[in-house]
Image 1 (tube, rainbow, N blue to C red):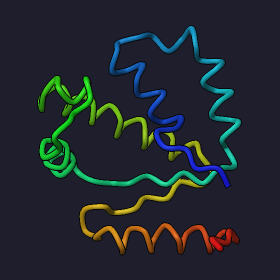
Image 2: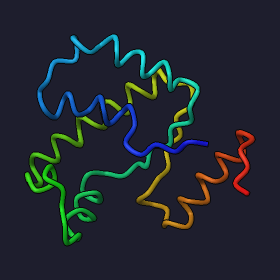
Image 3: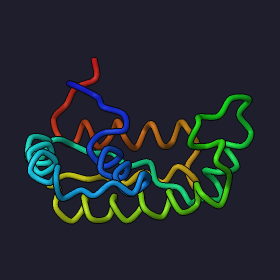
Image 4: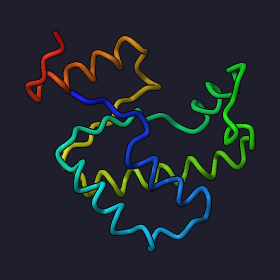
Length: 122
């Protein structure tokens, strides 16, 4: 099993964040999405306010996070749009509520999803 954090969805989102046209890379992006088409994608779902509260409570922030709440709110909206677009085209996307569920419950939900797909975590 390979676990990728910040996979294809985040890669695509960076084009939007930076204002870089996707068209020149569209074939490569499509190839990456096709390559990952049989993968399970787990999306940790949370609203922006919850995410920003978590980010702002950390002692260290990324360069992107240091741009502030307003900029990151726009980035969050771009990311969310890309998540929804990807979910429409991907075979297996699972959303985990990381606001309503605590860490143990979220983890349990992911484990159940993996087990339902025949993956053993032993």
